[in-house]
Image 1: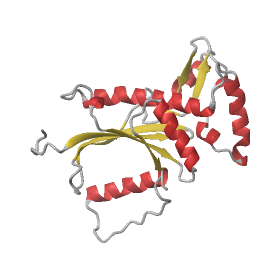
Image 2: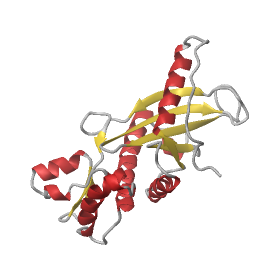
Image 3: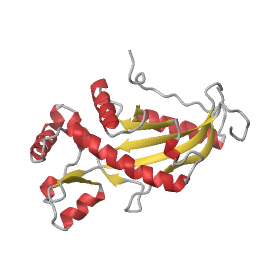
Image 4: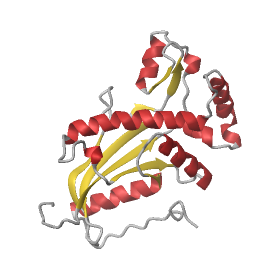
Length: 232
């Protein structure tokens, strides 16, 4: 039972992953949630960003196959391995999201990626690498979040039954591209992955900030977007 005495209220852990074209970041928040109430949730832990090894709240969206280790390396570690001449520069795979967008403007990028993928054992497709990179980012974030939140009555904060993860994608993405990202997230063992358009995420943040700051009640925000995916 929680401090209010209402056993229906549970803690929710929400994680947001911005899987960017060049950089990625992760943020999270914990709040009380009552499924039978229409009132706003109580924020237990305000949204904050995960700090990566570089000390920054973002990491390069890049991956490479390390032949000697027979494993993938990711993020800033790719730069270090190239600098130490452990792997060649041409093995650095970037712009992964663009590899899903099969339009004329991305042909050159997709051809280069196809050549790079052909040199990796098993010849994976770009969606496979997105899944690997999502898993590495998510698992790194889990370690950081556990350290920040500490133990709960049930053990790790990730032992909560209600863990949700939202992944930001470009608003112009097609339903097929969104489904590819969901499949990649599920393959990466990310719990309850949901797709959120970047424009929707920005609007939600602004509305949250306005509510928290108790700004002018006469001020109105209009959010214009396509219907949430998936939709009929």
